[in-house]
Length: 149
Image 1: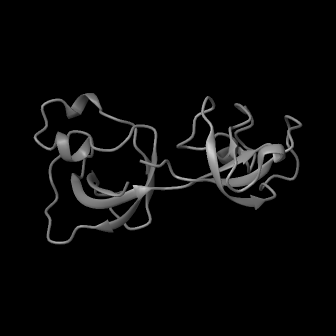
Image 2: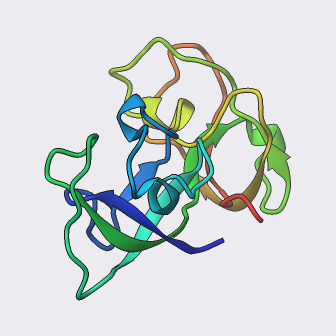
């Protein structure tokens, strides 16, 4: 599911990851809509290449313009219950967490994953970054596979 799209010049660097959030109101009437709005909403992507010999295009959303890049769906690191933490199995997130200062918060509420969905586990990483869970959850850090198709 790799593709070519336009991203803000600040994001146009190999290895940059972002979650595509869909069309902004400033996109209305833009001549480059079809090149920008060609990703799947809510999916995390990684820039795999920056197109050379292309110019920076003006954009109503990105103040420094947009550039053409190659992207592919990126895996999402997440904390899940150890009961379902097996490579190849499906798991879902445990639920919201109000403790934003926790070193695991970004894995309990990861960008690019929803609480209502199940994801295929690509790899089990192991212990999460926190020492203890303030919600008393047993958690294992895994890597969700990028969506297929």
